[in-house]
Amino acid sequence: MFSYEDRLRAVQLYIKLGKRVGLTIHQLGYPTKNSLRSWYREYELRQDLPAGYVRRPRYSQADKHRAVEHFLEHGRCIAVTIKALGYPSRSLLSAWLEERHPREGGCVFGRSQELAPEAKQSAVIALCTRQTSAQAVADEVGVSRGSLYQWKNQLLGHDVSASMKRKQALR
Image (tube, rainbow, N blue to C red; front, side):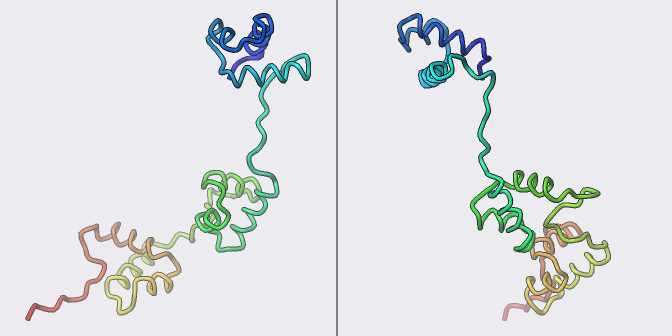
């Protein structure tokens, strides 16, 4: 980013040198030819340059509203919203959510309520001794399958199999 004075100096030198882009850039060591030409066009229109840069917002208020509404109406999942709409990033959507729905106490949108350690332990036991799928166990507890496996790794370690069924001896 160049200061107002730097941009004005470049435009004035450009005019003085007969609008020769290469010579102007060679003498100053800056800017690019496209920047110099756009500064000159701006200078021609206003007989001055704007004091600073004003970048247009990438997303409109309607885009923000649509993303926040989608998030709230479709399971409060950031990944689902981003995949469905094709925008924005996780951090940007989180900022929009914070902007529209300020949180108290650091609660994060889209996360399930924290379970007590005893509930996590019983969920891991159910996972390891299950008769059904891991997804069925996760649905019963009300968490994702990935969370269930994370809890298993935290409590038992990565080396322990998720299923504690006895393996039948080879015949």
